[in-house]
Length: 352
Ligand SMILES: Cc1cc2nc3c(=O)[nH]c(=O)nc-3n(C[C@H](O)[C@H](O)[C@H](O)COP(=O)(O)OP(=O)(O)OC[C@H]3O[C@@H](n4cnc5c(N)ncnc54)[C@H](O)[C@@H]3O)c2cc1C
Image (cartoon, rainbow, N blue to C red):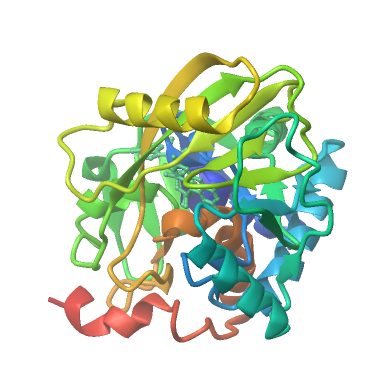
């Protein structure tokens, strides 16, 4: 079989890369093994313009946020689904210090940090002693709807192989690749932590970290906001269902859910909620994070037939569409990739 691009992985990265290549009218084939605990399948999909206790504006928020909204809206329209919602974050201050900090940021006219006028509005449902503020705009990307919908699209067009990819069947020539009986001009790895073991990319400074979430039923809690206290409580598409997470573990033996996370999250729920709740599921996965917290995008400096779209870390839902577009333009029109994300910044270590 002959194709132009062989894409490994249909998480958020592989979904948007194949979407943009399809829009460009390119030939491609996706191989994906539908790993149930891949981060794209367990993420809340929160797209948050500020981060951390100091509420620092996230990297490239001004450019990436509007792009992300447009990207999910467009792919959603193409598939007749809603792929993104605006759900602003209500930040419930855990102490007076955090309240002061938030007010200071709002007074500095930070574009995303706003006072919330109805301080008592959530008293019926939540315990909070120090008030709240609003982080706006924030979004939820509905990966749980988008990924299967795009998968169906690919399947219907015979553009998807549902199987494990294995490097042992791959051979690389200067301008082409061969994988089993597939001949392609390029192979692009969008396989998340799979690339950590990839012989061509294993020297990249990956720093995978494990994260967990509980899926909780909370009848009666309004679903028009994301709630934040020590954790994020995000509404899901189904009525009364919420996602709560997460933790960040750099040392772990496996990708399994832990009792420690479940217990600490239950304590948060008990302390925070005035409503009864029921835990429906517990998920865990490993984020393809990087030491510098910047993605890996582009083609291998020694092997131009091999590319990568990876290293999305904690922010794949916002970074993946933006950099999938950049990689598509690079592949189709030879346009440049943002230097901070271009994998060629590691030319030296990739040439070893
Ligand atoms: C608990 C948790 C919560 C998160 N919450 C958020 C959030 O709210 N917002 C946000 O922006 N980000 C969040 N993230 C991070 C986000 O999920 C990731 O950045 C993003 O999903 C990475 O997407 P990806 O497509 O690059 O990789 P992946 O999601 O890892 O996708 C890789 C794909 O490749 C396939 N694959 C891998 N190896 C092979 C192989 N050998 N053969 C065939 N197929 C293969 C897998 O099945 C998968 O489909 C969260 C992550 C976790 C763990």
